[in-house]
Image (tube, rainbow, N blue to C red):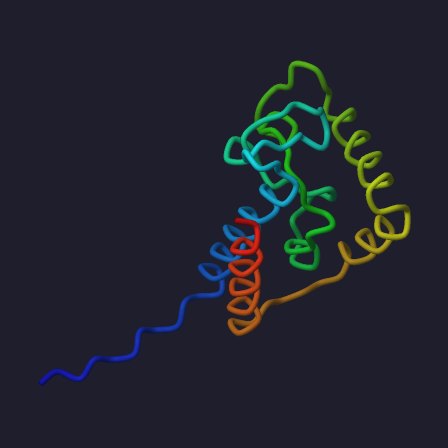
Length: 143
């Protein structure tokens, strides 16, 4: 009889990718209505949560803010970059996101996120596995 070897641990980058997949699922759905529709925080277009991105308020996706839910919200693909936007310039998008953040969280949270952004952070396998489990649970609570 063959003895099955334990599967090798997933690499940090694979775990990080999976953690982001769950984080994105949660943050695109968290503000959606019962039909799964949600408003882009920067241009106001309403779309199905599956049709947009989990956009970061602060660019860079640094590890310190990568999984910070207060800085991640539903954005249509043009607002989140990669496509030319019909209505808004890049500057408009940044300005609109800041206004959204001010209304929803206030200046204190913006300052806190800006402070976190400049901090270096490395994840361990265990931390990323914990992040994955946390987001799986959060997504589960939404349905």
